[in-house]
Image (cartoon, rainbow, N blue to C red; front, side):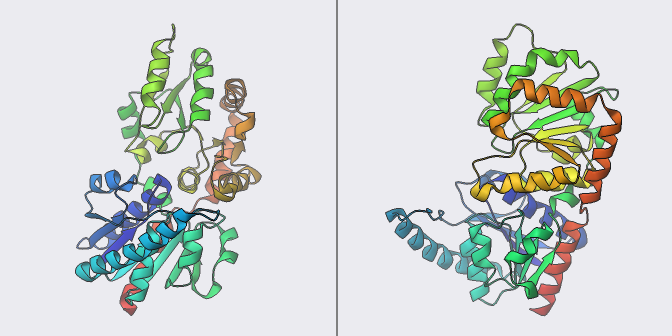
Length: 367
């Protein structure tokens, strides 16, 4: 099978595409891939690292207000469609999958116009503009949440879950602990603000560093994001007593292993993160980003909270004290932790990548 993958801007769009690629490779060892993204997005670094050929188109997102920039964006889109058609003709894919972000707009649209079967995957409860636009042209639409089904044409839309859920099922907890250098007797709290980090979470964590040592049976793994790592490291160097049960990392490339070893996750409520924690049954304290379109992260998070799988702290109420209190209460209440774990597992869709690949294979056979 020959597959073109596209999607970018944030890890939430890129990692699901890479998870699909790995599942395709497991089922079809001779499969060939091409990833079309933006050279300015995270995909430009992450995709080559995954040993997948990468090509780029120049594209930007539409402004939500009337702007001359939108004229330039439309021109870029037209040119990107032309470039995408050239790449697609050269690669000759059996199927194209888009996982969101404005970069997949011209690629999936071009594929549809060339008669190549296409699938778009929506990670969030509330769809993005690009996927809503592409759903008119795509052969199939896959969604992560049942609440999303009503946004798309019912005849072509299926509920699959997020493919990152399948990816983390291959995680190895022992390997994760070895990577972190954490004793098996310690509970691991993973604090993660997403691929680019989150300043509000970083500030809250810094203000609770002095109290981490009181939780003697816990090791904190604090992933700052590349953007914030140097500043956070400098702040920690200025502190007199940085606790020994804290590890600070800029980024984690073997996240499935680390998540498999995690007792509690503290982080944003991106769709990929929620797919991962529910597949593994990891209780979580979620701090939705208020800076995303349609406030979709809070809508994602509230679903887990209603099910009893997570606690939500909105960013305006986040502080070092509130986060420490929530963590302490959860870490010291084993019965509550067990119930949250059970609830989280009940929401998981660990077969997601397998189901998406089944959809891709069916589309390729119809070509």
